[in-house]
Length: 115
Length: 112
Image (cartoon, rainbow over all chains, first blue to last red; front, top):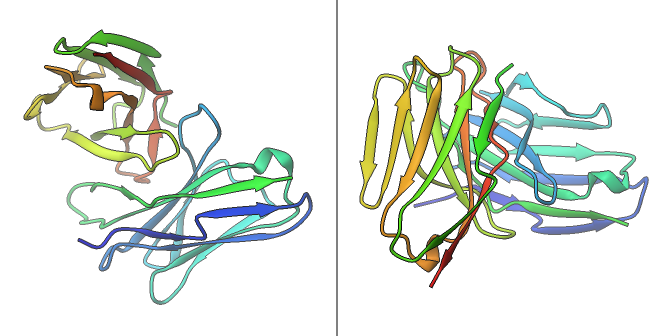
């Protein structure tokens, strides 16, 4: 079965640079979530999109922005990168049935290293 | 928002023994509770989940119980094997926003 795809898998940037992470949800899934996971930490919710509209926002810095496109893929744009932004960034997708909440399936993640 | 607490933070068991991880949540509106297994540098993988209209669910060696009144849920792994060694995260989801609030994780080590 098709899974969530993320690219790139690894990214190395310098401080103050910009990074763009991409996420391709499971086909027919309508919701995308972004999570940030620091070393030894649990995933922290950043932002989510339902049917191409931002649905919720978590602890996402103002330097970060995201959007979901007409083909449902999503991009997380990170500017003025800081050392503390080094982390694993996961995208997850789900199908909101409207009756019950549904399972979030995680992508393989993008490991961002800021030097 | 939702706050999930998870215990213990580390768990070492002998192969073949059982492992139990416990979580509590704060928001009574949460109605979906998945458990994820994460190996180092890999994605969280769903191993089992439970919804608030069910008290217990089992899948082979893994079971989850939910006590809505007490707002806690637990993961039980029986007949542990070395490949069960990983970090396990519990999570809670509210229907208002669907985002997952994770516990801090439990590092499980199964000794051969």
